[in-house]
Length: 193
Image 1 (cartoon, helix red, strand yellow):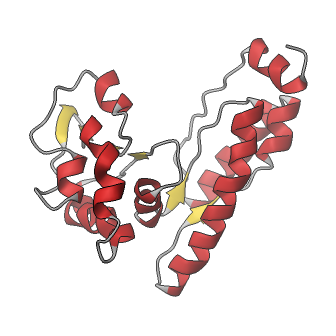
Image 2: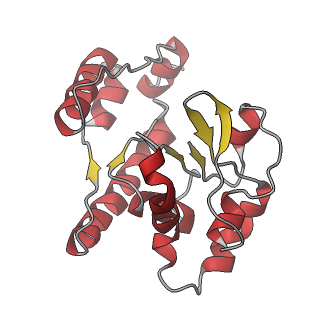
């Protein structure tokens, strides 16, 4: 796991103490990507609040959108999967995550404003897919008509589509989707709350 969010919620939620080298220092070239062994088969590249200044500090760096990709390349052979927890914005950190990824999975609350933001994220990803393809870099995003299914509460059909998409495009491994069945959220989407 890579905590690329300046709020460091992943790092904090796991109770990992402040590390000498976090993703911030690695992005700035002050150290190598240094995963913290959280438990067997789970390493975490931690974050800190210092990361909030990274976008401004890296703005003039050549190839700034590929810094994370290069860092991950140094340790990629040590891992089966690398998951990147991104900030809730479309800035340089998220762009680095997207250029470092082969797949994009966007967890989304089924609330009106979250669903509205999904359209912009998809637009950015589509542009990025085309630009990366010209460089020979593959990135795959799945489109499951999320707005319609989130608004209608048809989570069972969405679950099947996500599983089929991941199995078709990735592996035949069992993918478990955790369903959020809060009636309050569904009522908010339908305008009944």
